[in-house]
Image (cartoon, rainbow, N blue to C red; front, top):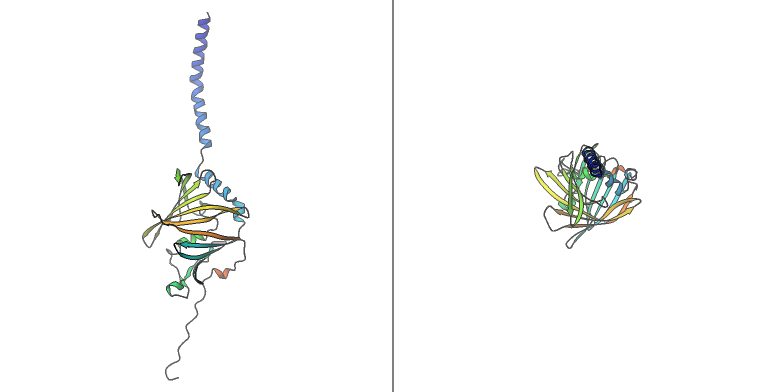
Amino acid sequence: MKTDIRAAVGAKFVEACRVLLPGLAAFALIGAGARAETVDEIIVQNIQARGGLEKLKAIRTLRTTVKFSDGSFRAEFRQENKRPGKVREEFIVQSMAQIQAYDGKTGWQISPFSGRKDPDLMSQDDMKSLIVDGDMDGPLVDYKEKGHVAELLGHDSMEGTDCYKIKLSMKNGDIRYYYLDTDSYLELKVEIQTTIRGALQESELYYGDYEQVNGIYYPFAVEQAQKGSSSRQQFSVEKIEQNVDLDDSLFTMPATKPEAKKPAAGK
């Protein structure tokens, strides 16, 4: 009798499992899917890690002062940003400054190291990176509204650190690969592919020594290299100033002074 009861209970248990286990498996898959992070969720985490969207948007102007070294060569780099999209960059060597600026519509430059002291208009290709630098929040913030497309490529290692790898296809045709630390969600590396005058150029940026300035985290150590090169140029951030007074004239192309006419011979 007991054997018959056990057999009946066993049969009912097996039947119950046949009914319940597929449902439990589906529930487990739903739960796993809910835990999986999408590209948008990771980008939101990156923005939060930097300080949050509200704090980023509260910055109206930004001035970054950087020391540059490449072997024995030393220089200073200064970048000034003002919303919406204005940027001015100065590369200073022994009191001489090469200037590139974008006022939201026009890009221009002064190149004293090439013997040119008057401002020149920049071509669309030459000012591509300058326009990106003018985006004070960075390309990942509001990327859809800016016309970019983001894709999560999974995980990758950056010098032994596990990272999320995000591909950003930008509106201007550039491709950027972001390596975000899976613990901090901050950028550790960005690979850039851009086409200048028909030629593909690939570079890499490495970020470290993150420090907080008024609630926002910035990398205070940056290294730049050509793709595949073991030689890196080193940038050390000296100072970051938020909401400083920056006049619009800093970003506007100066008027070229007309050359004085030479007196006619015999006068």
